[in-house]
Length: 445
Image (cartoon, rainbow, N blue to C red; front, side, top):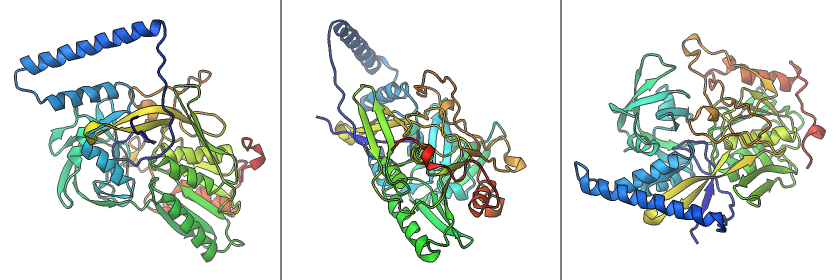
C-alpha cells in the first residue's frame, strides 16, 4: 500500500506542512460504475494517443519526462488551487521547510488566475526587508514573465544559492510595476516571538506553524509566568496576523495550550466514515488567563484552526479583520522517482461544525488598521474565495463566500490600532460585550 503523509496547506508553494491521520479510501465497482470505468479507460487511451502524436510529430524532439510531468500538473491544477505535483527536489525542500530553516527569499506564494501572488512575506526575511507586501503580484522573475509558468516552476526560479540576487517585477493594485531586487539567504524561521507589553501583558507572535512552534509558545508562557507572575499578569495577546499556516499537529497543540477539554478540529473526507477528530487534553497552560487573538486577511489555514477553536469554545476573543478562508486538507503521497503528489482530500471544521472554506473566521471585534495613503486599496487580500477553482463552502444553507480582508500591519507598535485595542481591553480602558467571552456559551465539551 502506498504510504500517505497527510498535510495541511494554505494554498502556497513555499509554506510549511502539517501531519494528520487519513483513512484509505475504498473503491466499490458495481452496476453502472463499470460503465464509468470503461469510459475512463477510453479517456486514458485518448491521452496515450495524444502523447504518442506529440512525441512523433512535434516540430522539435520533446522531453518525455517533462511531457508527463506537465500533464500531471495540468490535471491537478484543474482540481483546485492547492493540489499539485512536486518533483523530487521540491518534495525534499518541503520536508526541510517544516524544520524551520531553508534557503530562499522568505515569501509565501500562491497562484491566482495564472498570476503569482504573495500571500505574505516571512518576518525578517529578505523579501520582507526588500518591501514586498501581502497581495503583491510577481509578474516577472529575472526578466522572465511569470504568466504561463506553473506555481512550481516559479518557485524553483526564485530558489538559488545564498547571497545571489534576484530581480522581481511587482504589481500592486494595478499600479505601475515596481522593480525589486532581493538577495537570497538562509531563511531561519523563528516561528514564535514574544515580549512583555508594559509590565502585565504577554504578547506572542506566531509567524507560522513549524516543528518549533508549540515549544516556543510554552517557553514564552513559562517566561511570562516567571517575569510577570500569575497575580500580576492581565492576559495574553496571540498575534496570528499574516500567518499563512503550517503543521496541523502544531496548530492542535497551540490550541490545546489554552483549552482544558473539548474538540479542537475535525477533518471530513469524501466518504461518510472518513472523519478524524482532535480533542484537547486536560490542562490550560495559562491557567485561564484572558486571551485575545489577532487575525487579518493574511491569517490562513492552521491559523484559522487555532482562532476557530478558541472562538467556538469562548476561550478567546478574536479581534482584527476577516481571515483568509482556507479550510481544506492536503495529503502528500510519495511517488516513484522520489516525487510526491499534493492532493486535496478533506475539509476541516471548527468545534461547532462550521467550515470556514471560502468564508474565513469573522472576528467578534472588527478593527481596521489605519492604512497609509500610498497603500490604500493595495492592502486587501481576496482570500480563498478569490482563488480560481477554489472548493465551495459545503454549507448549502449559506451561499455567501467572503474571506480575505486587509493584510496591513504597521511596523511601529504605536500605530498598530488592532494591537492597541487589545491592550486597552486587557487593561480595562475600553469595554466590549465580547471580552472577556463567556465560556458557558461555548460549544459543548
